[in-house]
Image (cartoon, rainbow, N blue to C red; front, side):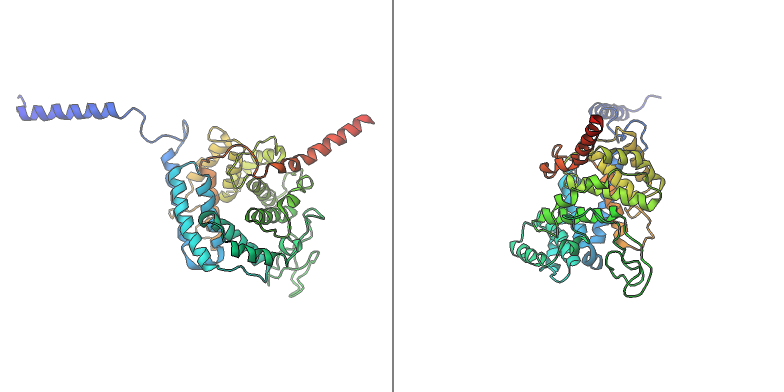
Length: 390
């Protein structure tokens, strides 16, 4: 039976439409795999990152959380808005960061002047806020005046102009939270037994605090080069004997890179930091073995800064692992975790491990820091020459 003429015409129109669509849409233009054989697409990655950023923004919009951690959250939004390759992600972070920066300045109109730790937190928030909103010269002048009343020991627990990061600084008392003086083995307030901080933890805190002060333009006890100069005493990086030591060394090295390259604004050459690059590349599998997404994210973004990308097996394995473990609320990590810092900071580091960067060339934040990184190599060369001469 022959179809009616109007039906034949409709079939011809459908065939023409299908042909036009087939011609206009090239083969393979659908979701693109991150690499050949990957379980996830570029769209999967971008969507996961955006969900993660929205989760952080929800945390930052909670007044209770923002009052305690807003300084760090504003900095999170700034670094993403400043370095993300994806323009949509940059704009999302910029809008979120600018809005939160205004709130931070509203809530913190003047620096605290009576406590060095509180003053450091204020500097961290203000140096991030001014990236979005511009400087506040009168506030900075008050910060400078307040900082002059405190010493390097007040800010950093040691004086890097005189000694390397020490191993005799006690952790805060686990019972009463009192910060005891150096060398104390029992709390002076409640007599609870104390443990000492890893010297890598002490170095990490000093690197971050001096970076914040230098980039803001206020000296928080010591300048960044005075802290960095002890890199030769922190090397070599031994194989950690347990997870706690692994954490201490790893986070010190990732933050060494962040404070040198302005939190992923620049690439860094593995030849400048060969021991650090080797440790991170060799041990990234340990971060996966410990099932620690926060640490894995930091390994990945520092290795990206060294030039690794989705073509390397370390980054591929890390991306597959992280993309498969995002929580329904957009976060990463244990959703039952009660420490809100851990919830959002883990998500931040995973975002940084997954995303691509718009690097502004290969250099250090302050190029004249490069000789400090090579100091121990020069010393080693001199020692070899001396031995050869004998």
